[in-house]
Image (cartoon, rainbow, N blue to C red; front, side, top):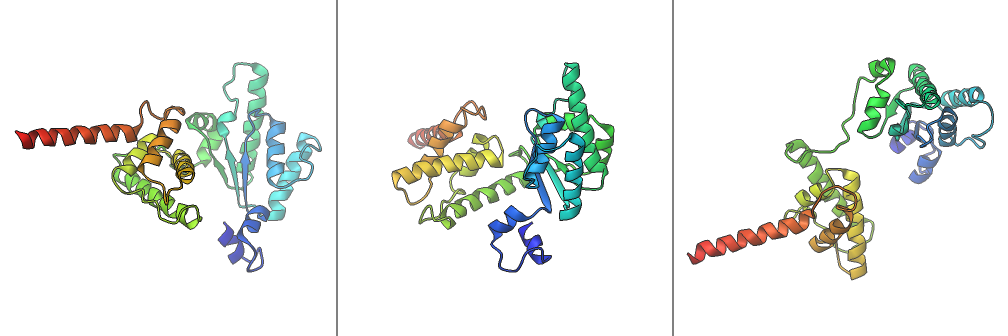
Length: 264
């Protein structure tokens, strides 16, 4: 998006990339509040556009300001995250009615011609697509995980991600030596420790990096990842065991079995 904004002349050449990210309004990211009321949704969108007083005005006025912003900034994409916060299907009549109003407003933006991306958990998918008109217009569903280790394409993409993480730790100046996350069984162990999610993988590596920095290590290695997995994986319910510890036990068993065969 930064490159697009610079190439199309929205910002002068040489504008710092972080400044472009802050000022651009071509793509608007909105995190849907847990309250999931129409007022909170409209105010969330206004904040994303940088509106100085998102609480000001009636719901109708707020929606009108949003539409004006979309036209004024030439917004090309609205991203609504945390769609699982929608209260669609709630038993309470008042809550269900309010959730329906939120649903209808989201549909209005979609039908108004501005492309929309809905993001959320598996629960969010059922809530969003419970509206037939929204479902009919969401022709593309982007796969964002979890990945499947047995799928070769998923496995390849995950290994590439791990390699880039190792490079990034050095490029950021955190470590003098590249962290090689493709050695031993690190990709597979990280995969199962993270539940196959890129986000959880990043969190595990970040925790491992902290351990490595505290130790004064040149890079992040197996022991740091194992310790991070022991703290993060089970606590977050991603697995009932530490994949790194299991890998070590399995390797020890194989080594012992090989020794017995040679002795025999």
